[in-house]
Image 1 (cartoon, helix red, strand yellow):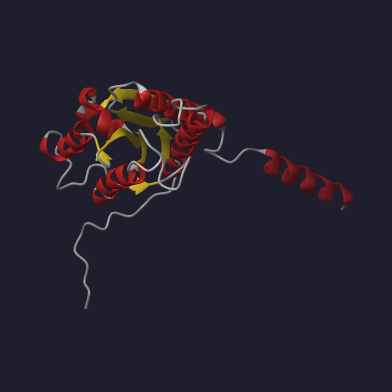
Image 2 (image 1 turned 45 degrees about the vertical axis):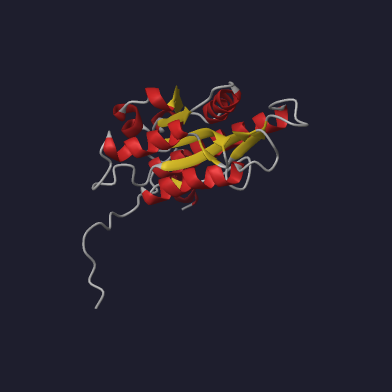
Length: 210
């Protein structure tokens, strides 16, 4: 009887020590992240690079960093997560970023299938002054993502990462770059969680409300 119990314990120990199927590091899916931005002075571009740097800190993550005008439909739809960055122009996003968002439908045709559904989305912005509309800019980007049934997240700030570039500021500082990296890391983590099995049902079919 003692030998039987020893054999049972040995088998149980071996079972518990064996990694669960699909849980090994080598089997983790690769997360594709698109960081798209507009930049004239180079400030928003620096933030975009920091967002990408933060995302790459998460294993099994690939990042494409591009200006909004250069993004293709294939890159947009292949991404598991999309992070958009814009400078603040009169308390709003740059026209180039708005055009890119409009192109989701008029050029790339996301509707009526909602082709960006359940992708992770986030925003970042740069502005000249402390109170220059950076939060409004990020909220307008996030609103467009919500309208496309995306899963929006924040990081580096309540609505995303931001930086002040003029006035008493000497430009983007390390704390602001750290916020951008935090945003990129969180986007990669949430995107990975979704892709690894956080499956959401498709409720596009009609619902009986009686």
